[in-house]
Length: 293
Image (cartoon, rainbow, N blue to C red; front, side):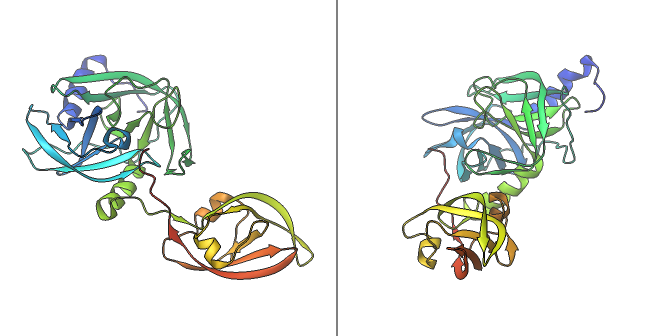
């Protein structure tokens, strides 16, 4: 993406990517998807929400039934498998480092099998970020505008026609984003294995504070609510406790806490309760489903 491609080669790039793009239709909506692995389509979870019957339109116009293998509303990614004619896997730019202003394009397919393309530029880039549903995205690739109808779940490619991510309009009101290759690979592995992304949680709401622990000032997370019947409640954690360490690691931020929560892990949690140290054992549970809706 560091150098422009002559405009005469762009139609060929679009055509090459379109050979790996399928259309998706459910009873309530439609969108696009990309062949990420042999017989595996990646698309937007919002396209597949509550889908019981799913039709795929392959690049040659053949219509086949698809099976929804998993959804992750926190990143807006979904996985579908199908049996049908051989469809090539999209060429991906695994080490892509897009810059603000880089040319990009998306390729979609409607339910009649018609190829469609949309062209734009990268509007903003950044490091790892969390979606408003708590999903972890490896890097920010935000577009300079929104997505046209039918492009949710479509592959977004650089000027050379290599896929840099999957398009989503679920995270910003006025801008689309590309969920990068690294994120798609990580989420897809879990969707195919478990049907969802396993996210550990304690069943609390918390915020960063400065507190006292046995007379010393420490950074931690003040528990503002505890879910009934959740892991924290079962372990005896209380509103007003300040989490200082989890598994021996400092937890001065929510991101630090999240990184330590592996589903099924038994963790020792050190809290400041009334200024005095108190330790409990908590078993990390799977976060309740983040499927769309």
